[in-house]
Length: 174
Image (cartoon, rainbow, N blue to C red; front, side):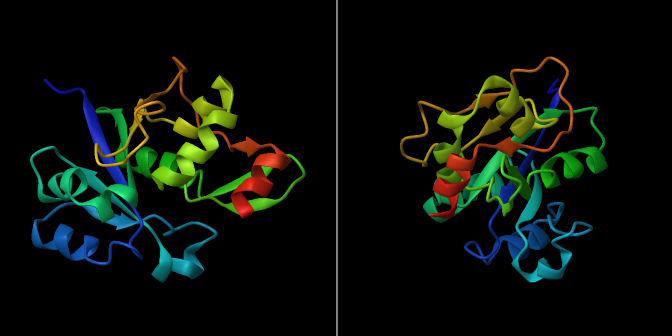
């Protein structure tokens, strides 16, 4: 029996048909910004999609380069309630630099994630994973083999804000 559940976070601005495909195939999804300080930007919100390996969205993520480059898969324990999963995903919409700046973080972008990962220590990686066991990219994402999949290094994952260095913040803003 599978003891995990998968959620894909996808950039709905780049993958405009994501919600339609979910609705057509009766796949559960929602807007990530809903109920957050970013709710005013709901039209620009990425989507969270509850994934199953046999469904249409999983196939799109595995075979379409646009989907692959615009999304990240999070693997959670099967017993974790959906509200906790969504809360874990929402915690990184905004990250803080050590000089106090708040930054909108495209954590669901493989490109952004791969730029950030080499600069994080194991505590920060655990914080980035949140309640997820593992973060995965589509096999179509070139260059990800060295860094991903990323397993949460913590045996007891928690929700905490991610703090990054001032230098990394500058790099993300450039």
